[in-house]
Amino acid sequence: MTTTGRVRAEFTAAGKSFLRRRTAVFFTFFFPVLLIVIFGVLVGTQPTGGGLFSKAPGYYVPAYLAVVVLLTPLSRVGSTVARFRDGSRFEKLATTPLTRPEWLLAHTLVNVVVIGLASLIILVLVVFVTGANISLSLAVVPFVAVAVALFCGLGALIGSLAGSTDGVIAASNAIGLPLLFLSETFISPDLLPGWFRPVMNLSPLTYFARGVRNLTFADGPWTFDFVVLCAVAVVVFALGAYALPETD
Image (cartoon, rainbow, N blue to C red; front, side, top):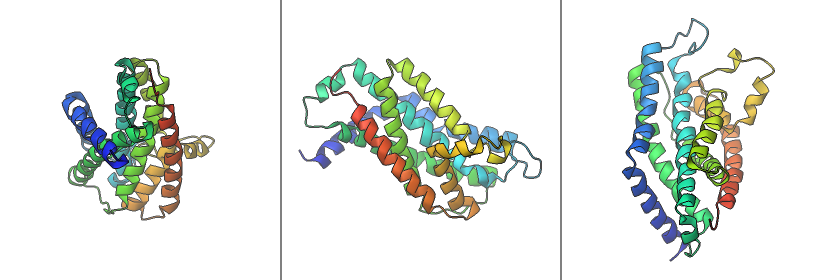
């Protein structure tokens, strides 16, 4: 079997596994919808009021996308690695031609498809529910795909290093929640202390948020953010694949 065949077979198996997990499906597709309803409709934005949600609705499009782009890969891939370790699945996979990078690539592709669909739903809802005035660009697609690959690699690292599934969940939340709110997503830089703003540049999610915001709302340059995101994604994905256990 070729590399393409091995990846396709694992992709099919991983996709079916995701569909069987109703909780995963719910949080992937409906949790962001709940956030849009809460923050975009019930709370609403106040462009002239100052404070949180003081920007126009279109400003927060990257924030809503970041919820699924960041949290879903961290939890799903991390938990999958932990389950495979607990079930001695990696020991069985070591007897097959499927390599660790191929395994991670297949699961990353599943996440790209699933999160891509969730992102499309989010964009449609943001426009029709909050009245956001945004520009739709096909360049958002590679931003989402690369960011998903990056955080799948990070999820693989977490799943490989954490001792249990509970440890994966705790580590994913400890890493994901600060990144989600401190990466120019829901909280704009002007609301944070001046000394902390340079720290935001250390978060890869910042480059995703900036790039997508410039594409959809601010009409600014986005190439640099995409290049940085790609470079970090390659490194993190490679580290995640290397960290996957060959045996239990």
